[in-house]
Image (cartoon, rainbow, N blue to C red):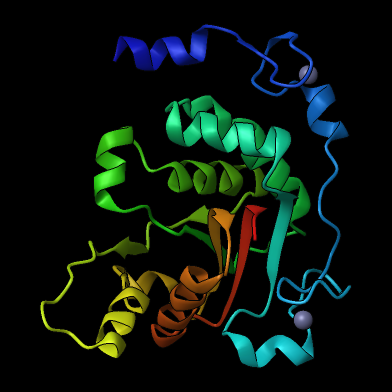
Length: 221
Ligand SMILES: [Zn+2]
Ligand SMILES: [Zn+2]
């Protein structure tokens, strides 16, 4: 508890300029160059981070907001949050993501792509939940803890296809009634192929969600 409180009281040094105060000072945060609006799959310029028409058959994702490339300061912030358990790294991360998102109406709710329970226990918190909650607060919308990640148990003797299905179906909608008929934005920290987000989009759609988009802090190929 004390170490938890100290994290918030003890000032950090800015990872970019070294000034005392925040993990990423206001000045350095504003000078970060964010990724322009484009299709996540082919990098073609699109409107408001839409997936382009050509790439729409690749997944169920229709819009994917990507704030940064996973390198330099963004990478350091994610590392601080995930590997050094520095909760305060969620402050600049959530602010950058909130600033990138458009105005969100009251029909929109945020959910996080949950972390494996084992990792949450090691870290002491679910980092994507922390980010999603902070963005929701800044955008004046609700955060709903709607997804859970099932621990992947390898089935002995499962075929390759069965194993692939097991990974795809590793998320579950825990409170379908709370998300049905809403517009949902899935929040995640780092995206690579987009496969996890894609599977979450699919199960949310099945649960009766009207529209599902996603927003991530950084992408890496
Ligand atoms: Zn700075
Ligand atoms: Zn495309």
